[in-house]
Amino acid sequence: MEQTDGKVQVVVFDLNGTFYNKSSKDEFFKFVCSKKPQNARFYFQMLYYKLLVKLHQVRQTEFKENFFNYLDNIPPEQVETYAREFWQKEYPENFNDEIKSRLDTLKKEGAEICCATGGLELYVKPLFQLYPVDYLAGTRVTYVDNTYKVEGEACKDEEKLKRLEQHYDGRSITIIEAYSDSKEAILDKAKKAYLVKDGKITPYEQ
Image (cartoon, helix red, strand yellow):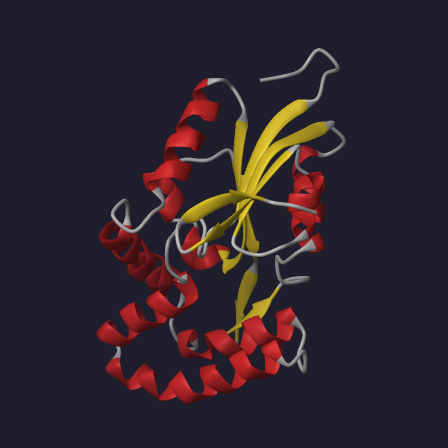
């Protein structure tokens, strides 16, 4: 779908608490612990880092690296295997039907569908084998010395817009619709923006 001014029309949605009704970082932790019960020992460390990020004591990138310590010593191939099984269990029952219906309609009309999430691409990517999108912008990690390190910055707020710009590489885009469970930069850039709370979708007021 291209406008007469040549701009590509793009729809952007957040994942956690938006398209996916739950928090994938919490639910995937539970799933991995069901496979590796010994990893449950990271639970209190995760609560600690959740508190630090709420108090703005750590940056999102540092938070992501420490929150996902429970994946240490699990190679990427194994994480991806777990993720495929996890999403097959969750999709589509635990996804927002209204958003999915809207995305399906816009996809048929030719808009490009993009997911921009703070979740790790490592475990989010297999979801989009079940529900294909044009582009996934998530937090990227590398596996070094049996631990995961964030590449660049965590994919939050302004970083989501930077990733979209990089993906379209000079092509002009118009974000025609955007969905998120929290106020963030990408909503301010959209022609139509929506906040999602407990599965309910309401127009976003800047």
